[in-house]
Image (tube, rainbow, N blue to C red; front, side, top):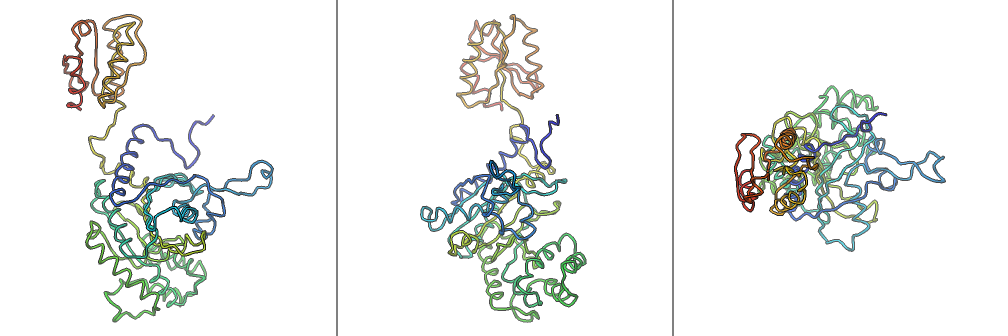
Length: 442
């Protein structure tokens, strides 16, 4: 039998889990400083909740769950694994709006699933770390989201990241001005969003494959090929009032963000589009130099909650990709040296053949002092040094830094011998002093 995980899925062994927990802990701590509250939603959603929210490409990647019981033979799906954390949040807002505060700020760290083709760096199950603010159209929302994400990355040790920003209203106005009809905006945005990966020639080929004529392609590449001007003077591009409003909103976000930790890291990118169809305002992505793709992204989605509730509820959010953060941090050796890499701070040896109660009691006292303690599980058949040697070898193989021994001499004197497994140094201490000694030595 194949004992490996399903394609596109992964098992995480202890060292990997500790690293993941460390990053998640930093993310949660920073988001809480900004007043965001935790939220969790089910892994499974009704299929109609998810369909039609992500655009054509996204909808194809929804992991569908076939009907069960009497409907099993139909081949139809009624449920699906969640594709992201944003659409489930919108459903929650619509369901519990009366119970939630006017300005609801939440963060959520949970796995999502994509029915994608597994390949290097792309998985079918992965974690997203979302932070969203509901209920306000103020540019303060986006400025604080960028600041919170910036603080997360700075605390994790990133220094060279960029928060790339653009605005969907500007994009829509430029598309319309270039001769793209509203029903084709989605196709054009998907092609333009790949500009940083495939270049201008690649975008042109994609647009041609999607049925755009030469004149429209030329207009699009000209419109998106230069930076936005600091004001509207001298910009030879057709743009409507909605586009102008988007430009002013973008400038206000950047003005406010200048007062936060995000200021040195923000950059406007005219070709940033983000493929998801529910964005309505500012959009973001996080770039680092040595990563193909982004560490995360997000934007404003004022109409998404209304798909469930029938009323417009302003909303904006940011999503960090945990897996990509971990990859970059591993490649750059960014994890702190103090991060636990062993299962325990100390292992208690069972020296006597029939005194397990003694060692359990001692291990419990160390745990009560806040130490991570492993008790060697098997009592020896007889007392003696050779038995202890086997346990020392086990502790060394496990990477446990200290071993605590209560042998015949220690038992008689009420002491414990603590051995440093790295240096070989042994220290004899009164039993009551062992916890303090270990905590000072770790």
